[in-house]
Image 1 (spheres, rainbow, N blue to C red):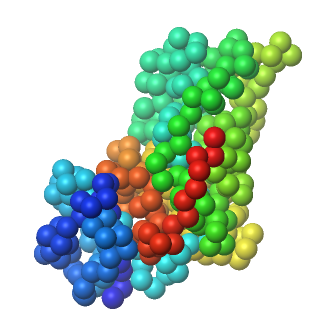
Image 2: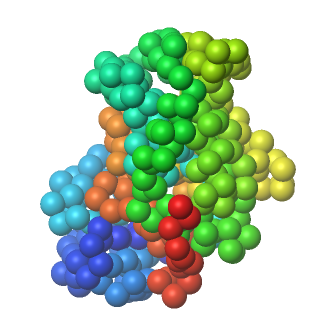
Image 3: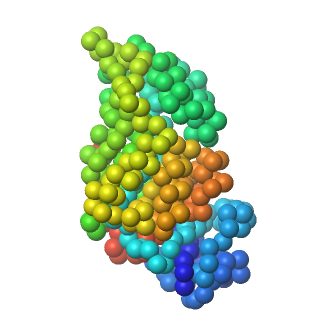
Length: 304
């Protein structure tokens, strides 16, 4: 056994022995399945990794069934010591700038730019500056109103709480803004957060500028390396998850070196390059992919 395929159903009870038998015919399976959550999550040992194109064909079969597949190295540490997670559309369900723009009546205009930036069609830093300029004059009080409307992604609380409880360092890193990342990190128990900063004028309104330096496409990868260096870790010790083009460098780095690099409901650049994808389910899949069973997953009250 060289690798492990973790199969996770979006709905508990929907993963059947028939699904696993079908996967055995499509993957280089080398042994019997091991259930982590009965009829929801199971592991299959593999003799090799399928190519991206083969995984794309798997998605054609599995997407209608609401089943995700994540691939990990059997040689690397299963339970990762570092979580580096994107915020917008990953740990929270929303794109923060889009929701903030709703209060200025320009959500559609800003959301259109966000989609293109996440798809890699626009330079991330230029797209960020352009969107923030469109918010110039918005009262800073709108930030608090936007925060109170946030929703955490399903499984986010369990992901951070479980990894935290097992000694992992949890880091939130986002091209979004510190006003929100600080609150998300505190609510969910992240150890660290990194984000951009709005410039706010003496009149209590957004100036339309971002305080330099901008946390851009390469910054997430740099923070990944910095946090690994802090405890002498390797890329195989890391779990990186995100949805957009600016998450790709850190996800690919983890994927290439025995870590877990996962695309969560991904935009096209990640769909094409990342083996492990959450396409139907939620963030609990990241725990199953590390070998956690239902009995080991930490749950609790909604942090807000």
